[in-house]
Each structure stands twice: as C-alpha cells, then as structure tokens.
Amino acid sequence: MGWEIHLHIIAAVSWIGGSVFMFVLGISLRDKADQKAVYPRIGPIFGYFELGVLFILLITGTLLISNNGLINVLFTDVHNQVIDSLRKKLWMVLILTVMTVVHTVIAFKTNGKERTPLQNFFSRGVSMLIFLLNFLVLHYAIVIRDII
Image 1 (cartoon, one colour):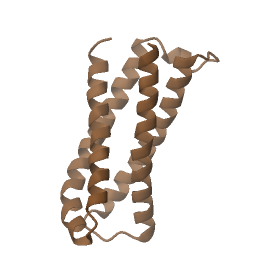
Image 2: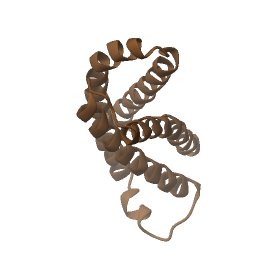
Image 3: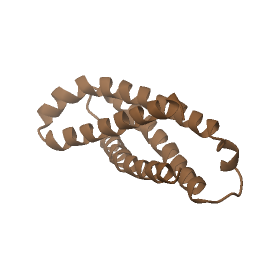
Image 4: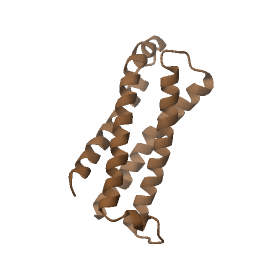
C-alpha cells in the first residue's frame, strides 16, 4: 500500500471529523440569531473543504480498489467478506455523495437567505443522514481493513 491509503485515511478523518463538528455546532446553537451569525460565515468554508475532501476520498478510494486488483472482482459473482463489505461500502459512498450534492446545492443556494420549509427539511434531513451514514461507511472500512 502506498500513499493512497494514507491520503484516504487523512481525508476520511477530515470528512467524519468535520461532520461531527457541524453536528455538535448544530445542536449547541439553538438561538436563531446565533445560527444566522455563524452558518453564513463558516458554511461556505466548510462546504468547499468537504467537497475537496470528498473528491480526495473518491479519487484515492478508486485508486485503492484499482491498485489492489478489486475493480474487476466487484462486477462479478464472487462473494466473500471483503468483496461483499466493499460493495456495501461503495453503495453507501454513492448515497453519501448524492446526499452531499443535494445538501451543498441547497446550502449554497440559500446561504444568508431564509429557507423554505421544504429546503429546511431536505437540508437538515440529508445532513443528519450524512452524519449517520458516515459511521456505517467507517464500520465497513474497518471491517475491510481488519480482514486485509
């Protein structure tokens, strides 16, 4: 394993750590005035950071799969604990990526503006799902690493 695994782990720690930070921030900032003061300032910075980290995760993950000869096996009938766990992880990563795009579009479109109830529902709901799904992806990463 080369540089890809190290960069992948650093990016994963950044992605999940950022998610936890924003979750704690969201819980602790109950006052609407505080939210309006904080989110428009840190939201875009965090959003760009997370998009960059997600891009790094997708690139390094693809390289890790390819360099370890797993790309061809993923699309076969082969079943074992590593391949099945990797498939589950990749499905969750796909869902996470789509949810991140939805959340980012809403967040950037409404930054500093009042959100509609539907935008609020999707933004907060997707944010919570991303937060929770991160830990499932981490679980499968640990399972795969444990086996290898």
